[in-house]
Length: 499
Image (cartoon, rainbow, N blue to C red):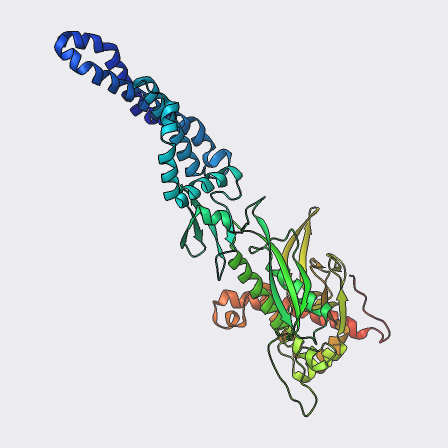
């Protein structure tokens, strides 16, 4: 109410002044005498009437601002009302007031004035053709709603390089587009009407984007899609959306290799396309590096011997051993011991959505992810919560492998995944040959569970070091008991574990 009074105070006072002038004009004229009254009567009467018409238009515009535009602006519509629409309505009201002044105050024919001004209007129209085109295009845009203030758009017909940004203002002649780097592009409305544009904010701000990655012909399509899909799903949640789900499609076949189109969804008003592309690309490059793949590049090779291997071969014991070298809890193993375990690891390919490990099930193995994406889920009181994701080179299930404990969480395949299973039976000969590994591995597992590094155990406070030693002792005791029972079993009895 206070805002209403402040906005209407000035036009109300002006109207009151001119109205009082008209009411008390006869008394003023009589007080001045007949001679003076004759000279100023016409001037004062016309001035007061003109003032009333103009102040009435002023008051009408203020009323529309307060009662119509302000309630709609931002709250009801969710975006700002275009300034051009407000100004166009205000101009129309003043034109009506001008017509009233001509017809009522000066007693002139409005139709005659429009007819005689046609030739002048034609000349002015030809001279100001571009300006008039900008104005009417701006009005058409406001009524058509092809883009609105606050929308994110991309202009496609502006020579080299498209313009992407948020519509900041639509005025009489131009549209102002604010780019991601805060530059303002001022574009004539007539050009906006001619150019093709993409509106990322219609019908809503959830848009699909894609990036193209080219891999060598030697990379199997199933493997490439598995790695890329796992990578883009790993990027979801930091900006790109988990729903709708991302996808990987095979695109063109070029001289470099096979193109793969990685597609994802994001809210353009929350995350800009370049930021989303940065998140997805960094995740993909990380997954490619961890799986031993590289993007295709121009090359010409001449080989006088066997061709070198350009990607990790999961049938190779050496490549499996390289994967084991990334497992932190096995960091104290020698190369020979890693090669021994690598030969014993069993590869598995699982489809997206497959439950690899069930919470509470018994187990005696650990899984090492080579390609794809795994998700860690915890069930509590009937609710399931996703705790984390496992990416290539990472592992899960180490406590079941070393102590035979039940699975503490469920693991599902977020995408098609290639992984290796390392069983306690495979690890038993290595531990039997070097018993000191019990202590070394138990300490590494304790550090992993506490979220610390070895530096913390060696250089931090005595309390932290004591905590690490306590957890290490607990794990060491469980490991010795578990592997003692395992070694006492007959050789033909397999260790049973749950999925």
